[in-house]
Image 1 (cartoon, rainbow, N blue to C red):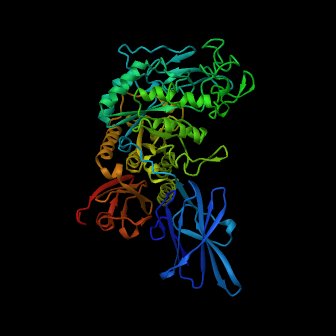
Image 2 (cartoon, helix red, strand yellow; image 1 turned 90 degrees about the vertical axis):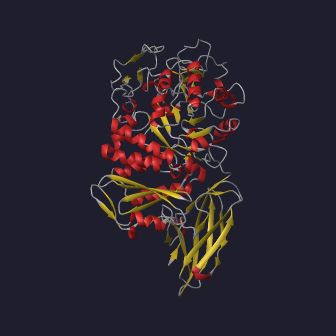
Image 3 (cartoon, rainbow, N blue to C red; image 1 turned 180 degrees about the vertical axis):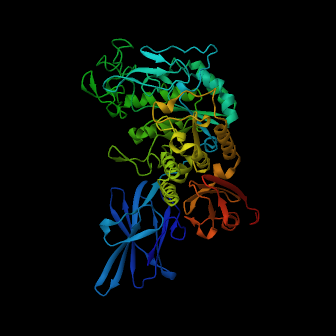
Length: 605
């Protein structure tokens, strides 16, 4: 018998990612005699190193290795030399594919190694961010704050909906290209007007989809990074919004779209709207010419994912870098000086790591700002354009958008994955991410790029999804209208206008209640995390030294009685004796969630 568990402190210390220069200690347990064991470490795309493990009492083999050769990913497993009647036989002990307990392999080439993430420095986010509850606003679809309800500066070749209740619809040509952008007319004054609503709901920070000058309703086709889109209002409106939010002890982060620009932008200007001698597509002498790559000038050029509306920018170009994050007269310099509290980087996978570090260096002059990246997968081992990304290893992103958690929540509540599977997947992310990153990630049940959560899980399970959003580690972010009961599949139906005249009161109350809990319970915004499961019941445990918050989810149609002895904890946890008093013979009704709070005072409830 051989045994190792990367989530158990008896077998690996410290848990999860480790800092450069830190020592990782591992123990492998066996009841075999006369065996020798080596600890094997492979650097990502690098050399293989081996370390002899020392035999201790109680059948343990131990090794301690100092990771002092740089940040990055490392992979490890164990080589076992076991004497047999036929000579020395080699076995290998590695990961089962998830983490935690491992399995034995007969052939080294078949081994699935454990991942060790090595980061350069701790990177705690600003305190306001760690305690925040975010609200994502798609500006055109939130609210028109003009007293007369008129639309600011309607765009040419576009249309405005007849009523706010209309379903969004694109007008496309035979090739699928959008030829008429649709608008509802939401604006910055509308957000200003609804600050009391946001305060009543309990949110403390806003994340705005792009607000800079653009041609489309989503504004990811930037025309001018230094101008507020005229349909949204003026720079004075934006400054007023920032000042009022700060006065209410609220914060705001903007969407930074730096991978591409609009084809009709000041920088590319294919249509000539900025003049016949401005922009790379109109003049080979343009100062922006080197930002773009033309195959055949001017109509054939590199674009984002082949979408011709979005010419791709060369992010390695020094002029473009200086324009975005130079110390003075740059995009970041302008908006940071107006008081924004951070940035969410669109398609962070398509921005070079050095580009992201340049942005972070710029933000260092504003120590209370935060930098979040749009990443859809496990950001610790993401490969993009043939390169392993290092944007969560220090001096770069504070965290990423936690789409994996969203996928897990939906899969669990729609019965396509079990509680055990979800608990293990959550622990994998916990193990792979540096501590600060894991707790800084921006969690969501939906965004402008996904289906609405109500559409995905239905009315009953929506209650459970919201509970999970606010109890899981990370910073919760509510997509505008989810709390009002909006539904919809992907774009454009997930971008309906906010139903101000028809807010679904029970759903609103659900969000308001959970937001209040999140802000009130220290264990929810500051506590450690570990999942557990019982049959198909998933448990989320958040705890500090003196208190714990437990949330259990039953997604099935069957009432379940929990026997404490049958609970599977994936890590050793404190509060075990107190948890038993609550959980033993606890009954969870069908399609329900149950939470309770434990306060430890001298080991008593």
